[in-house]
Image (cartoon, rainbow, N blue to C red; front, top):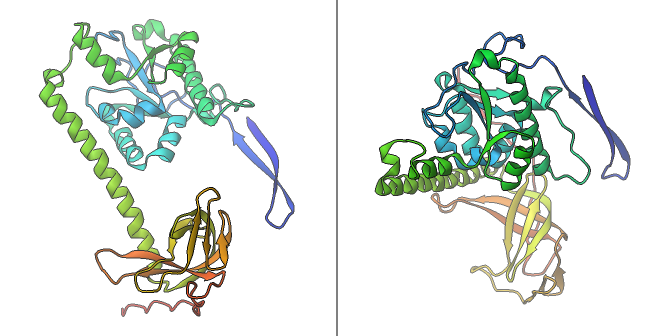
Length: 361
């Protein structure tokens, strides 16, 4: 089945371009369960006897976490006890866009055969694909897609209920609105799994590892999680900075057009669309006489000598790598246009890049 969406888009030159987006839907995407005899599966991932040691859900069940549960409880999902989990395509795509480190950890879990994590491409199965409704946000549409896929799994597995000892599907979410709508659709739904696990243990309704109930070890665990999260953020930022510097290192000084994103008291923040790069052009350097600066917070605007900068003004700047301090290399920007006496710099000659010499065989 083919669905298509057609719309028109105005180009930069003022023309109109027609765009057609096609979306293919299929009926033969597997559910991945050993219990299923309807899907023509070459291999299965989800176990027929899907039992997890829990008094909260004593019956066999598969877990379907929403995006927020994956993002905030990835450590819980990595636990060896958590098995037979369905990761929807909608969730996988959202996680990839919102957190690269969590996405990598989730992909690693999916590749562990003993964990029995199955990726279900709900966006391409005819029964589980949904269109975004008018006025509906992208987040609400994705939440609805998760509920639709969970309901389809629940109804799909009911056909084999006599052979699976009541195998069910449990949706995990920490969104109160999503939880309420799922319950209205007769879905089994639980909020954040670790919170409910600890609460159930506290009232004697469930059992867990003794270490998980020790407040000192629990505190150490939380501190470790926070530390790992902080280090992952630092590593991500350092990686972006390193590869940006590596990109400009061999390109010398570049002249590029950009737009003013923000105005500060002594600088402007410039966006270079060609590279998706943001940089700061300072006007009060230590090695030169400071020009006459007038900052208007209400605008906001910054007047330098006789020129006033506004947000979204078009400018031209130089981009270069400052490697004077090898341990703290930085991307530098300097103003070329508009030309302001004592502030802007002359446009350097930009010739063709020299080819790298070939290595001797």
